[in-house]
Image (cartoon, rainbow, N blue to C red; front, side, top):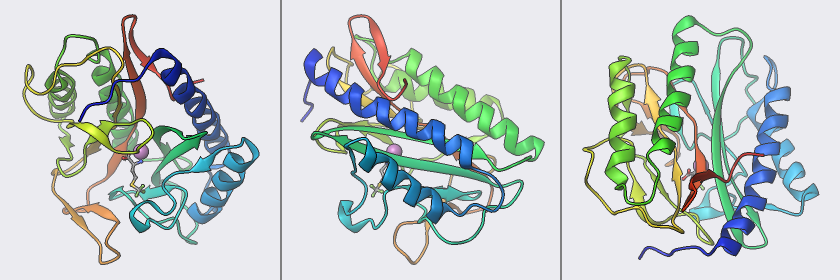
Length: 248
Ligand code: MF3
Ligand code: CO
């Protein structure tokens, strides 16, 4: 079932999104070689607490942490751990912020120190994929228009789009209908209506798109060990066009 949000509800989600965006800005400042993803996770917990918000991912289907921290070949849902990040790594920090029952979801990939040319290009193209998707998030388009814009650009750059994880609508629940795949034909899928709020969260690999999940039941990696990056925003579909809620 697709639930449409009122302007007032979207404004409440934007408040959650602003806290999320400012938290990502702080993370960008502290990510350096030597920091651990567990330290980043603890920083996020305290940051959200100070801002009167809670980490929605913690406890979600038993997920144990506030953030997902996905390093190099990890696509998504990596557990924060005590291994120091190394110069040249890339790491995606994903979190869902709950402020007074309304949610916002945003993931960002970060370079650790100086990274390879290939990694830098992957980060750039993946972020461009997100914004190409957002451009299509307008009333009257279909979900497939977002999917196709992302897939065609990623593949034109020689990268692949993860199939096993997709974007989603969001509101008081983290995962609402419809799903938002980052691959597939234009002109298909549900039509976008005023008041829909969705995530667009392309996961893009330098190698093939196939993924496999570690024995921990969460950590999803590229099957071929290639690098993977992700950028995600929460977007409201409005009569004024797409509004990014996870931006300050
Ligand atoms: N934030 C993720 C998303 O974009 C969901 C993380 S799964 C969780 O859909 F279990 F960690 F919550
Ligand atoms: Co997310």
